[in-house]
Length: 234
Image (tube, one colour):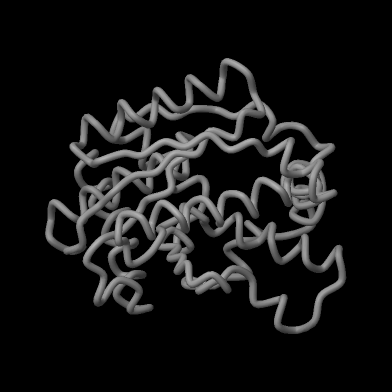
């Protein structure tokens, strides 16, 4: 059962990559890994697809220490380095001062963290001649993004959610191969493979808008629904 579950998850990701022609010409990829469930699954699934020659590009791993959770952030970094080293995937770590950036630019912590992540990952990718940065955005993230945009007020374009691929103004290319799977599938994959992951306690803090949508708003919407909002949307 373990092998069947593992191969089905990886087959689904491989099919999504192929259907969207995401990595056709890539020679080197930078995997953004925080150590959480989603990015840990990304690291192991991409490594498995590389081993099975579904993905032909060389893999590198990057971990960004946001310095927002003293102690825990350092343990996250150690965890990612250990995981990547075990898989023989070269890893780069970088510390980013999110609070300072947020204060200087009068941004929320969420917005500052997102901007610094994109900027720093782009720098690491460029320095290592990577064709794209691969992130672990998944199906439930997509549903949350659409709801967040609705709350803010969005046009029809915003209702499209997260794109499988995007090129930012600085030229950084982002690829998201896990948009075909949901959070439950990711946890099942990790458990079937007996893989550990790090838990970010701030993800339960509903003072952050994203967490409020995830833990309060979406459950209310789903209460009168026949199934997962993410499954119905995608």
